[in-house]
Length: 217
Image (cartoon, rainbow, N blue to C red; front, side, top):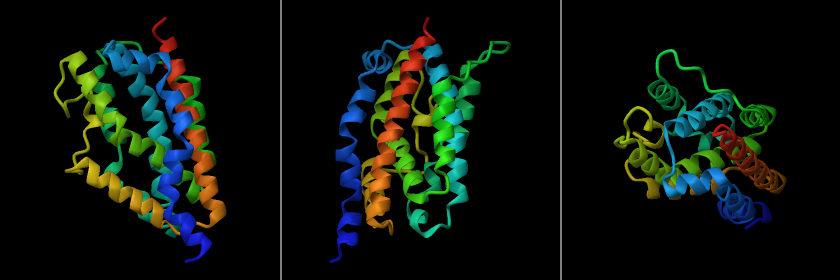
C-alpha cells in the first residue's frame, strides 16, 4: 500500500480528530450554550436561518460546479442539499411586513471563503464535511430543540432544514459518507489542505455564532 493510499484511508478520521479543538470551541459560544438549554425563540431561529441561506448558496453553487470533478464527485451527494429547505423555513418564520434579518459580516465572510476555494476540490470537500456531517449529527439535536421551543413537529416549515427527506437512516449514511471521504482520490498534499480548510470552516462557524448572539441586543 502506498503512502498516498494510507493517507486517503485516514482522511475522515483526520478530519474528525484534527478539528476536535476548534469544533469544541465553536460549540462553546454563548449562542450555542443557550440553544442547548432550549433558551431559544423564533428570532433566534430566523436569524440563524437567514445567515445559513447565504452560506448554503455559496456551498451548493460551488458543489454543483464541481459535481463531475473526479476528486469531488464521490462526495457531492445532491440528496444533502439544504438550500430549498432553508428558504422555505425563512419564509415560514417571517411575518408579513416584518423587517428582514440583517446579513451579518461573518456570514458574508463565510460564503466568500467558500467561493474563494470553489475551484479546489479538497478544500471544498472540507466545507461539505463540516456543514453536512454537522447537520446530520449535532444539527439533529438542534432541530429537536427548536421544535420543542417553538411547538413545531419534525419536518414542519420553520425547521425543515433539519429533516433529510432523502436519508432513511442517518448513522449508516454518515458512515458511508466517511467512506466516500476516505476514497476521494486526493494526494497527500490535498488531504492536508482538506484538514486545514476544515479548521477554517469551524472558525467561520464560530464567528457566525458569536455575531448571531449580538442580534439579541
